Amino acid sequence: MIPPRFDYHAPASVAEAITLLGQLGSDAKLLAGGHSLLPMMKLRFAEPAHLIDINKIPELRGIREDGNEIVIGAMTVENELIKSDILQAKAPLLCEAAKLIADPQVRNRGTIGGDIAHGDPGNDHPALSMALDATFVLQGPNGKRTVKADDFFLGTYMTLLEESEIMTEIRVPALAAGTGYAYEKLKRKTGDWATAGCAVVMQKTGDKVTHIRIALTNVGPTALHATDAEQVLLNKPFDEAALAAAAAAATAICDPAEDLRGDIEYKTAMAGEMVKRALRKAWARCA
Amino acid sequence: MSKKLITVTINGKKEERAVEPRTLLVHFLREDLNLTGAHIGCETSHCGACTVDVDGESVKACTHLAVQCDGSEVLTVEGLADKGVLHAVQEGFYKEHGLQCGFCTPGMLMRAYRFLQENSNPTEDEIRHGMSGNLCRCTGYQNIIKSVQYAAKKLQEPVTA
Image 1 (cartoon, rainbow over the protein chains, first blue to last red):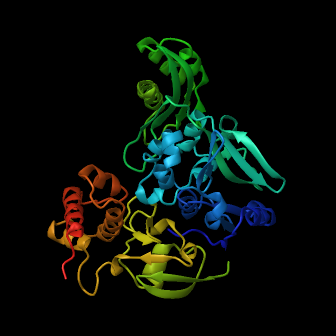
Image 2: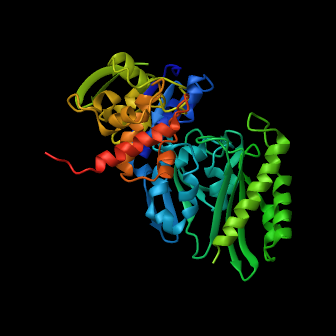
Image 3: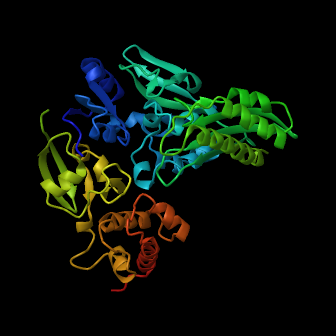
C-alpha cells in the first residue's frame, strides 16, 4: 500500500512550520511520527496534498524542568519518555505507560504530541494527560495559548487544535513525593490499542484518599475524565466498597464503540476492572 | 508533486536518488536500490518484517518515507555480514534454528542486532519485550529467543586476534 501523492516540506523551525501551515491551509497535514497518519493515507482515509514534516525541528524535542512543571516537547518519542531520568523521578506514570504503547520500533517514531493531537480515543496519552492534569501548549500565527487536557478533546479525531496551529509542548505538574500512580491497559496483543484502560494519580493521608484523578482510555468518543468516580473516593476510607462504587461511577460514563475488541457491555465491564486494578496499584504506591 | 533529491548512506555506501515524496523507505530499498532483504509483510507497521536501522534506531520501513531519510545512515540485513563472515545474530539464527519459512527473518535479524546494542546482556523476558514488534507467523518464537541468546553470548566473548 502506497500513500496518495503529496508534496513534502521539512521546516527547520516552529515559526517556519506555522508560516507553511498558513500558506497551505486545509490541504496540509503535519507529519509527526507518522504511525497513525501514514497508515490512514495508505487506506485513503486521509489524502493531504501537502505533508509538513516537523521531525527536523529540534525545539520540539526533549524533556526539561521549568519550576514545578515538566515540559515535554511535543515531538518527543515514546522511547525517550521511557528513558527519561526527569520523568522517572517526577512523573514515572509516563515512563511506565509508554512501555505499553505499540512496540519498540514504533516507539522510536511515535511522539507524545502526535498521540494527543490525533484525537484518537484509542490513544493512551490523552487519558494519561488528564490523570496528570497536563496542559498543552498550542502555537499559531497569533502566538501561543495553553489548554488543559480536560478541555482539549471534543470528539473522535476532533480537538481544540486549530488548522493553523502546532502543539509544541505538554506541561505536566511534577508529582509530589509519595504520590501513587498506575496505568492499567487491557490489550489483546503487543502493539494493540486498549480494549479499555485507566490512568490514576492519587495521594492519601492515613486511610483516606486526599487527592485523586482518574481517566479512561478507549471507552468513549474521547478519553474520559471520571470525575464522579473521583468524588466517590475523595476524603473517604479506601476499601473494597469504595473501589466497587468508584468502578460503578466510572463505568456509568462509558460509551465505547463495539469493534473486534469486544461489544459495549464487555468493554464497559473491562473499564470497571481496569479502574479497580489501577486504583489498587496506585493506592499501594502511595506513601 | 515534484521529486526530491535525497542522499542516504546505505550499508556504508552513499546513494543519491530522486524520489517521490510518497515513496516508502521499504520500496526505496527494494525497488530503487535492489536491496530486497527488508520484506513487505503487513504494511501497517505491525509485523516488523521491514525493520531496518535508521541512524542507530530500529524503524519499520513500511511506515517511514524515503524522503525523511535524507542525510541519514541506513543499515539493512544486506549490510550485516562482514566480508562474508556472518554477524553473531545471523550465526545465532542459523545455529539455533531461528528461522522456519524465513519471511520474518531479515526484520528479526535487524531488530536483534539493534536490541543487543541497547541491552547486551538481556534476560529472556527482556528479549521477548525487545523483539515484540516482530511477528513470526510460523510461531517459531522459542528458537528465535534462543538465537538472540546465542548472539548475546557470542558478542560478549573477548575478541581474539
